[in-house]
Length: 66
Image (cartoon, rainbow, N blue to C red; front, side):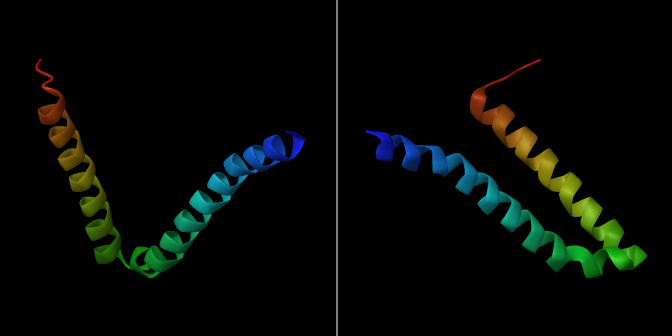
């Protein structure tokens, strides 16, 4: 039983390191775009439009009305 709990306790650490690795690799891939002004503006516009799209999609799927 102790081995089982030791294995289960490793999963959160793996999840955190896996997630940080993905964010690090994406950031290094996008870093050249942030060096020039046009690329940075385009990247920010893409991020903002992605969040707005996600917000409206989830709002419509969950049936939330104001």
